[in-house]
Amino acid sequence: MKILCFLLILSVTAINARLFEGQCRPLIAPVVDPFNYKLYLGKWYEILWYDDEYETFDECIVFTYDPTSTDAFDMTLDLQEANHDFAHQQYKGHGVLSNPGELSTTFGSGIPSRVNHYVLATDYEHYAFVWDCFNVNSTHYNERMWYFDREANPSQRPSEVENLLTYFDPQYIRTTYHGKECLY
Ligand SMILES: *[C@@H]1O[C@H](CO)[C@@H](O)[C@H](O)[C@H]1NC(C)=O
Image (cartoon, rainbow, N blue to C red):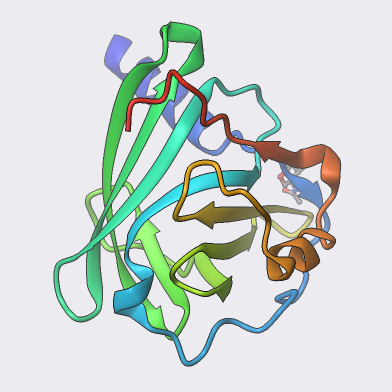
């Protein structure tokens, strides 16, 4: 019973992201195509994130994508918990390239269920702008976006990123901390 409760709480937490009323809008920009999958892989620092309604203490966030075949990869999420002396946590996931510029990823063990990583802009060397949206039911949707950079503290924000950011409500855009406590 205890385990069941724990699992229930876990699954509720997992879907407890902020939801918007309505349904997903169409892609705000075309997906990058042609897409150079190999150049895209590697390490990305999360600079901005659009998602959470709940407070999170996860900072120093880094995603690493390592190829396992021509269209599959392992995904590692490294973060540090600002509320626990910046304790390091690591989560392993995996994914596939579903279409040019479209990745399907999961932190679970099975096959990813859908594309959840639309690359709307990248120059591979510096930045990437990634979008995701899904309809939770007929009245609510969940929308997410990430601005990734190859550097933890990029000196400037690319104009492509600035343009795409205008499509989002600034009050929900979260800046990931990459300060001196970060261990990478
Ligand atoms: C859709 O999900 C939201 C959030 O859980 C809920 O408030 C809403 O009532 C649901 N709508 C329907 C039609 O089930």
